[in-house]
Image (tube, rainbow, N blue to C red):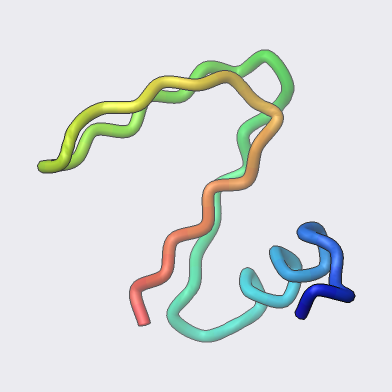
Length: 52
């Protein structure tokens, strides 16, 4: 896996069953709130959700 870029790994993950993703555009703000805390950041980013 060390030979694969982060982009390649992300592209493979988002195509798998049980995975969804959210694309955050450049300069778009995002806030994620969970039972473990809160995190804010600005895109560009891809949020990958693994529910498998």
